[in-house]
Structures are given as C-alpha cells and as structure tokens.
Length: 243
Image 1: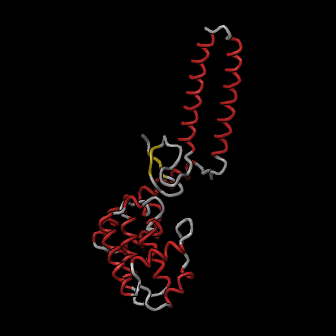
Image 2: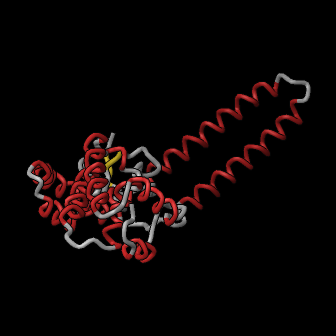
Image 3: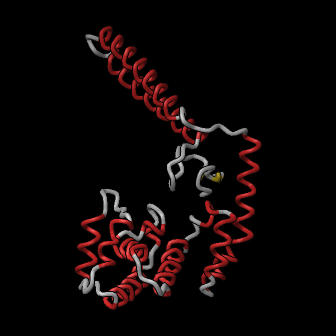
C-alpha cells in the first residue's frame, strides 16, 4: 500500500486512511475512497432489500420507501463528505508530493543522528534537529523519553528554586504529556520514568515539599485540562516549611 506523509504533523501512514492516525488531519484521497465504499455498501444493502421487497405482497410500497431511503442516505453522505473537507487546505498535488519527498529524505538522513545523540545523551543535538523539523522529530519513537530526560536534567541542575521550577515538577509528576505531547505517553519507558519521579520527589523534599503536599498543590491548581499557571504557585515559594 502506498505511503503518504501528513501535511500537518509529518507522520507517515497508508494512503487508504481517511485521516492521519496521529493528529487527525483529513486525507482527501483516502477519505474519498472510504466514502465511495460506504456508498457502494449502502447501495448493495438497499438492493438486497429490494430483492426481498419484490417477493412481498407490499412490494410497491417497500420499493417506494427503499428509493426514498436510498436518496436520503446518499444526500446525507454527500453532505457529510462535503463538510468533512470544508476546512482542508488544498495543496497543489505537485507541491504536496515535493514536500512529502523532502520530509522523507530528511527523516532518512537524520533518524540515525537522532538515535546516536539519544544514546550519548546529547540533548543539544536533538534540540537542534527538532528546530529543523519538529514534525518529524516529534514522531520519532524516542521523542517522549528524550523530552522527559531533558526536562528532568534541567530541573535537577537548576540552582534557583522558584514557581516556574515548581510548575515544571508538577507537570513532570502528574501530567507528563505537557512535555511529550498529547497521546505520546504510551512511548514512555515506565521504569525509567518512575526512577526520575523518585529523583524529583527527593529534590522537592529538600525544598520542603512532601509528596502529599505536591499532590495537593497540583489538584488544587490544575484546570480541567491538567494545566497550571506558575503565577498561582508563588505563595508556596514564599512559605517556609512547606512539608
């Protein structure tokens, strides 16, 4: 099956899919194929009912209803199909194919560099490559662990403790997707992540924050989406003996 590259996030997937499985961006060719198949299946189903209707005493009424239902199904399907593409930014096919080719070539050239940098814990190189092509790097299998390890290193090496460090700690412990990106927590090495969390709990205990206190602060200030504002945490920095 032919592969395509998502014009929104850079992920690769098969051409028969209606949407990118990673970010949900509509793929017009795949969606069109699926739409045609659904319509074809609907028509086949209706024709099957037609055969049954012909054997029925009330076949005239049933056939009339069948035709009406078929028309309604097709109209609804066309309306749904049209609305699904209303917000698509249509690209010239040649330009889109060129962009996809460039993305694939960049990936082939740099994935090995990413793996080597990760093995050496050379996070600066990974960051530079991320700035070059964030869409590809953010879908790199090791991206989630890189994001967490880089953030953990930054927190542990920060000499000045303030509300911004506290907010990063809370995100790391209770909402890691803030750093890895939505839906990418599944790529986290659970054992490594738990070890880093223990390291943060130890660091925060030295700052006067127990594990229970940290949980309490996060639950109090996290909104329905899990986000917190550093400005709301200033009161905890000014307190003494937070444990």
